[in-house]
Length: 182
Ligand code: ATP
Ligand code: MG
Image (cartoon, rainbow, N blue to C red):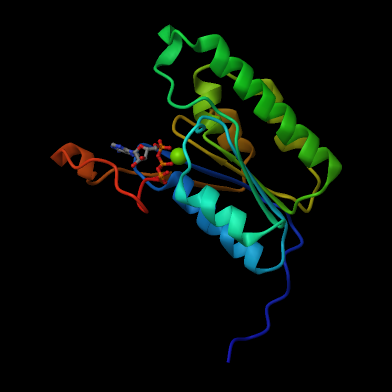
């Protein structure tokens, strides 16, 4: 028998960052856990878009309490990317969606996937994200993922985990695998 555990009342700001694999995976695991507790979850993917990864298929099966939107335009190659404007517009659009969803209070957990990366590359400005963190409803769990988390985001967060690469199959020439990477 498990001891009865009281429900969460304090919404946390959670950051998964670092160079090792597992940031989005950890956020999705947490989102699944929250969904299982009857919570309403929104996952906004800032960079991904255009291809159907497993989590998108899963979200469709999980129903209305697990909403996953891919709002990005795929991989960016830094500021020299010829589609820079397209990426910027997509990231801004994702940010507006995030703000609206948080303001309306229709979710208990909001995951902003790859937002750290989007901030690092200047696709979204740091101030807007800090504002989201500081003005979020007290009960909302806010999860931010991606490499190069901003120092101020880390300072404001309640939980920060840095994934550290020990080994990655890509180094051995093993390409991305279904169910592991997408
Ligand atoms: P995942 O989505 O698998 O949890 P992630 O969110 O930690 O990964 P991202 O920085 O978002 O990592 O990169 C996404 C893609 O890059 C994934 O396909 C992942 O396998 C790959 N990747 C992540 N870390 C590394 C690494 N250290 N070396 C090479 N490829 C990596
Ligand atoms: Mg990721």
